[in-house]
Amino acid sequence: MHKPFQLGDRIIVESFEGTVKKISMRSTQIVSDGGERVRVPKAIVFTNSVRVS
View 1 (cartoon, helix red, strand yellow):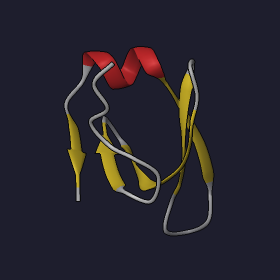
View 2: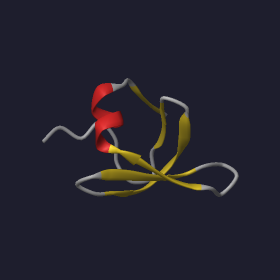
View 3: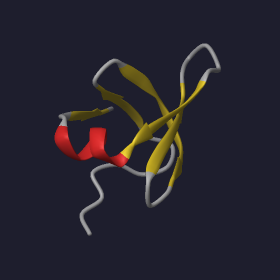
């Protein structure tokens, strides 16, 4: 499967922005600059543009 980003990458997808901490089958966990942990469902990642920096 194609992996557009990896652990440690900074990503922006929809209104979510942060550093990738965990990638699982169902979601991607990111941590924002403010320390907030966010789980982004794979459905959002696969149907939206992902900006990797």
